[in-house]
Length: 606
Image (cartoon, rainbow, N blue to C red; front, side, top):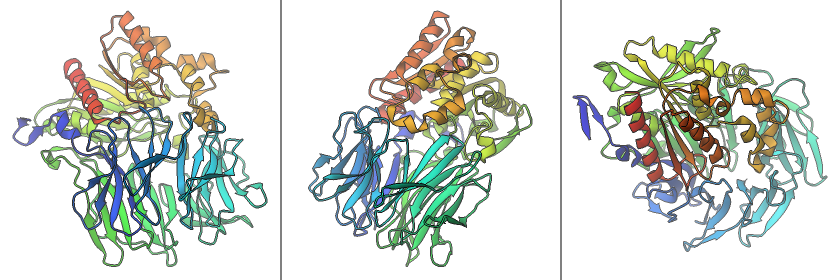
């Protein structure tokens, strides 16, 4: 650790990444423990921590593949978890028995499974599987004593699971037409009838979320009467609809606690996640005093509705789990994930800013100003999120904090086409990707140049997945705008990528085509926005990071681009992780990758 001035400490990548990354939380049946996944061992494994506080216990011991701890069983200490192989996203469901042994419950080599929830009687769980048809997820339930499964719905038409009623008779589905338009259906298992609930014209989203306790009402999200997603309920026997909750931003998730005492929903408030826990009968919002400021990424309510566990992070602190006692109104912090050698005040708080684009459309962004900028001008990177249609948020991001800590300003641009800012903004880049959204990123660079503490001649661009594509698009189509590019598994050839999407994305195929073009019909256009066909225009240094098992952006995408750049004698570094997919789950690989990025921008930008 070195000191760059008397106020700022620079941290090694190992110090920042040895802070724990954790996700998910589930309260045990007896309210004694919270289950979660953590990368403390270097690979994500399942852990349990006592509700009363204390040291967590490691429950799985994977050394290769991430363990995604889903949920405790309703009436004992068994739990379910998901796991794939090497990041290939062919997820299988496993059970960890009370004696510590593990059993694989979905066993098909190419079978991908998704957990949907527990049956109301606690005797089975619902899940999706594509073992019958790789393109579609059928709906099953599995008995938790015999582990025998039962087919509830055969999916032959691209339905996406939404919710199942407590009496198991009705299953709600969403069917996507494009990224801006979807329908909502309910299937009656007794009559074997599928009913359309959302007959409409134009682009409107409908997304079913949960049934009420009596299996009479379906709660769903829709933007039918607003720029933003509202929460409504429908008596599906009559079609009568009522507004439940409306916010000046998108409502994103909604569910009831087990006995329907609480309705929980989350709000995407200008890139910050807020959660409301509402007393269903009175409509009063629970005031959970004592929780820290930050984004609540996950909420779980115990079966007896006495405890609420929350995963909370901020731009300067990784996720920690807190428990709120409803009756005693007591808050207990259960985890402490920031590395003890890292001081939170040395990290940088994210600031939400806005700037006008080329056509005066206001573009939201998140700015990180390094502490070093108080004494000297600093280089900068424009960060572009994944998608298309993703969003940068003010959550803790160790890569961004690492670069900021070492003196690089970051501007995370939420270009047009990003989610979270209304349906008009979301669709504003359809069939214009690599053009208008790229122009927004260039205007982000121009915004940085208005800041006196930025070195205007040292601004690069960085992003992952779709953001990686935007990096390469910027270097190919606006070659004089940015000094360097950091491409993290970015698409280089949309024609190939759109033709090779994973089979289980079939229900979203048309939505992708609506945003980017049909690779079988719009070949000329798609090639015009694909950087690999224009690599000869790139004249700035590039670093490329790629997972060999990535099912979304195939390694050949990066291979081809690197080959073209080397052919043209452009400085290029290429880092491939043979045991990773779309994202780097192993801490060792993230350390290697982040260090390579810092060394690259130090050399070519700083």
